[in-house]
Image 1 (cartoon, one colour):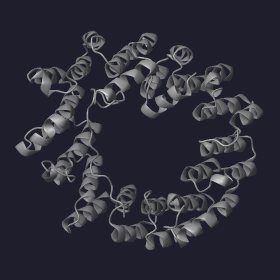
Image 2: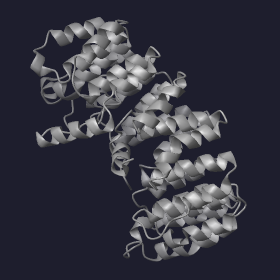
Image 3: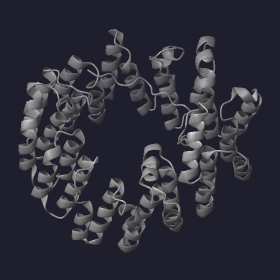
Amino acid sequence: MNVDDLQWQVGTLGGVLPRLVDEIRDRGGLEALVQAAREREDWFCATGAVRELCAAGEFRRAWAVVEPFAATRWQPAVRVGADVLVRWGRVDQALELARPQGPRENAVDASRDYAVVLIRAGRVQEAIGALGPHLRSGRVLAALVEMTEGQGCDERVLEVLAPIAEEFRRDPKQSGIRDLWDVLPAQARVLERSGRVDEAIRLLAADVAAHRYGPQNNVKFYAELLARHGLIEELRELADAQKYSAVVPYVRALESAEQAGKAETYLRDLIAAGNPGWHENTLMELLIRQGRFDEAIKAVEHTFDDLYDGNLLQGTLILLADHGQHSKAIGLTEGRSPEFLAENEAYWLRSNRWWLMGESGRAREAIAEIEALPADEVDDRELTIAWLLAQDARVEEAIALLRSLPGTRAATDLAELLIRQNRFTEAIAAIPNVTAQREESRHLRTNGQQALTPSADPIGDVLWPVPNAEPQE
């Protein structure tokens, strides 16, 4: 078994996509996953089979699936294998498997996984000790908080976190400390769950006042902490002072308190004061959650032809579709300015329009639009048509078209249709194995093309630009 191939699968979502594995499992295709794990050494098929077997209490079979992978000492496989052994009641064997073996590149992950097994074996203090050398890793801090929840050792965890948090507070910019922004919310999480909410709030309030934010945006965590404990007025004060990360938790808290009207007024006042940006997006989301779709569109439609970051058309289309308003979303793809179309129509707008049409029963109309365009103007033309054929219940036509197309992405779309017909073994066989996928990826790079992971979107390479990433404080 080739560890490099396993790592490539995880890094690129190679092999059989996890979402396809989940669909096979949900439809009763366990045996096909077991076979693929054994014969193709497909990691995602292996983990899918292990989850299903453990859920059924078949731990011996689950271990038989994962053991060849765990024998390589590849850390993800060690982690899954140890979990199976613990569930099976073979705790000593799990500890032996998970115990770190000398200096290694993944020492942090190995120590974290070993600590998890120690805790599940009831050896909490040993677990905390095992993490000690790596506590300045943000991943280990998060793991420490997660794995110790409900273990009755919060005071011990706080003892471990306190000196790191205080060192960070004294000088967040010193060398070796900048990766530890997470220590502040980590400490607050443990204080909160141990019943010391006032102390958690006091510490984070001081951190926010001192502008100790970090890439994880501790303002947002502090706002959510206030919201969880119904401190709406304090949350309002934070939102007024910060303007960004506290606004959404404040709006959500008002909604939960059945004060959506107050939330709407607050957002409209912010926008009127000359602070649109993220607040317009938040207002749109609020109105859509209330089913006020036309008002939501009106609130942001002035951005729809913008050529820069303030454009909220993409986010509006997605949210409307999520709420079943496909016709309204399709309407917004029409009537756009020539300048906007020149920049975006071929890039993403058409693909989104055809996806919306396929979802709303207008697949034939979408196919006609595609076929009316020159073939070289439509990226992934055949993949898109195949998806639309399937949406139009012409599945066999879609399958035949996909079988005629080269490449992993077409094979993945074909497999998805076969899975929906419960043809599991055939579906997996349709997907090139890892060796073939890696060769395809190398070929694309050699020829100056992007080596694409098979898309998780419904029609090939539909592009979903992220609507207005949330600003940091």
